[in-house]
Amino acid sequence: VSGNTISFSLGTMDSQAEQQIKYVLKTNTEESISLVKDDFELGTSELIGFPIKLGDVEWRLTDFDAFRGENSYFIPNDTTELDQGLITAQAFRVVGDKPTLSFRHKYNTEFVFDGGIVEISTNNGSSFEYLANDLFLKGGYDTELDFFTFGLPNTAGFTGKSGGWKISYIDLSDYLGQEVLIRFRFGCDDAPVQFDPDRDTQRLNTIPTPFTGWYIDNFEIVDLTFLDGNNAIVTTNEGDQAEAGDITVVNSEFTTPTNEVAIEHDFVVFPNPTQDRVYVNFTADRVGQGKLQLIDLTGKLVLSDHISIRETNSHIMNVKQIPSGAYLLQVILEDNILTEKLIIEN
Image (cartoon, rainbow, N blue to C red; front, side, top):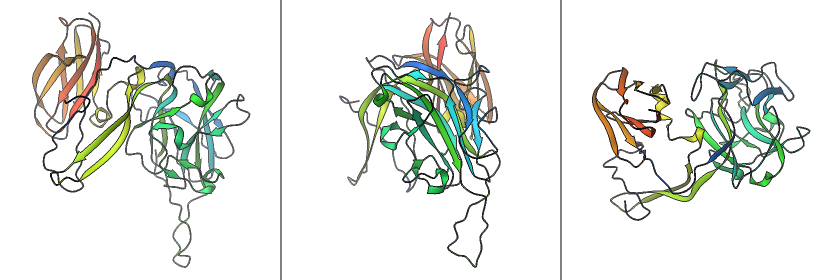
């Protein structure tokens, strides 16, 4: 660490190789404040499915997949024309210094032809307007959709494969003080078309596989605190550079630093909050040795245990003597670090 710069050595990497670095920052700014939130786990929801124009399938709660917990909202990538909405059940007033829509989502659709967009209404649902890419603080649309998806020109959307669960933030500052509804809109174009060698210019529309479509989880309206102007710069020994910018979100309830890698490893920490002991379950790609450790929010190591890593793992950490507070529980693997925020209430 040097001033406001954190540097990491990546070592030697092959062409097209990827390396993931995770770290936790403590700031002197206030955390983001959650205004409306719904993780779809209580049987009632802030959102409801609502047909827009076409289709026999609708948005529904499912336990087939979820970012966190058991449930998410899902609409399948259908084989017929479809235009369906998932809408906030009641209007809410946009307030705060940086009002932001935040949500986790995952999708697998026919690229360009089927996909989703986000819309907003300021007149109690009489009409909705498209929330364009320039309003996204993070996790924006993939590319422009085909005109026949929604019958709308020049409309970018979420389409193709998301590569797992991702998070999106949309700035609602333009609607400050207004009563609004939010709508997630998913569209599919016409029925599948098989390849015809006599019509080589024909647009193909493939048949979707089961359980593909758009999943929504952890819906939240938040007064967002974030640090802008962050840049990641990679420099080679030869002096070549690549640079990318992003924002750093100061956590709210749904944006805690429990990362997406945890989902890939079926990483479960329970109960949370906890007293006395905590159970840690996860899967791993490689067997070997690792560590189970507890770190406080200043970065101080509080507990550390050496553990054997198998394909399926279950461990118990005794926290009976640990003072109440927020901690980071980590599993150190050979090729990764799994991290979960843990609340201890002793």
